[in-house]
Length: 110
Length: 114
Image 1 (tube, rainbow over the protein chains, first blue to last red):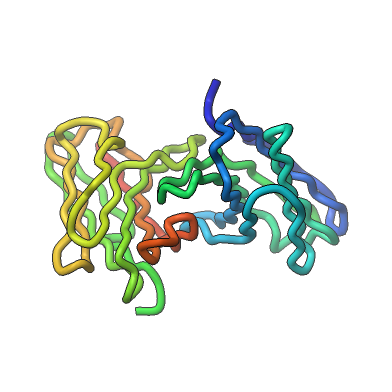
Image 2: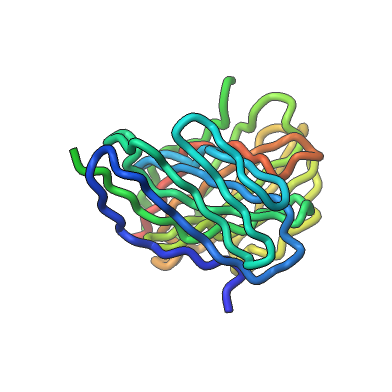
């Protein structure tokens, strides 16, 4: 079993829909959970950062962490065509090493 | 500079040649990371620097790969005798020493080995 599992997609949704992106993981030592967004031919950029379990909201984005289920989610409300990108989940046990998911390609259809 | 800078942005080389990829981290970031991203794959960790030393080289795929960092700033990733399977995007990231969970990435170098 890989440390981090993420459905590669592609995921296509109409503009304005709610998007749900998910990752599962196996290492119970992970304490820090991140979502990165990567546009084509660009480097990943940090979108959301969460420590331990719970929810975090930032504008149209909500990150959820359920450590008991080893499951994290990113929700995008009122999705826009500019949200079309690859979204990578990432996790760390606090040892300066980040394990990334393979990324989910998201297409928002105008 | 304002962000992590990588050069060249694209590199096409012939099989068997050596290549050097450069990374300029964000000023003040003492930690520097190299990753490789292949088509349809996630980010594969290669090597990590704290200052000029590399405590974790576990991700380097073979002895053809090496990296160095000088002056606690610029880093160079060298691939000797390139192979076609080395074709990928090589990404560099930097962070503050105690915040390795928050990394800032450059745009990457797209390497194509013919």
